Amino acid sequence: MHINNYMTNNDIEVVDSGIDFATTRVEFSEKLTNYYGYFHGGLYFSMADSAAGIAARSNGSNYVTLNANIHFMVAVKSGHIYAKARVISRTSKICLVEVNIFDDHDRLVNSGTYTMYRVQ
Image (cartoon, rainbow, N blue to C red; front, side, top):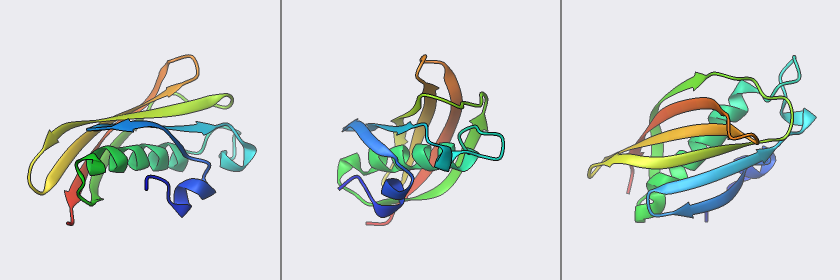
């Protein structure tokens, strides 16, 4: 199953997934904003991490996040955002996933790489 309680509590939905890719989406809500009324940075990270985990697990193995490097580029305060993840490298224990987040105008607003560790 792709959805977990954390994703549900943060309104993160899976809109597409398959072998080595996944897309998550969040609709704007005031409960997900920072002090200035923009999507909270932690939400960007959470939805990207969720998409990375789904893409990594697409081979049937279980993974946890070992490391992440994320770049916040544009703040968003309306509409929705999408995290599009794709596996760029996979070994027997490590899966490297690139994740880009776009707003509803297809503008790149966040980018990162997630190193996932295979636990099973």
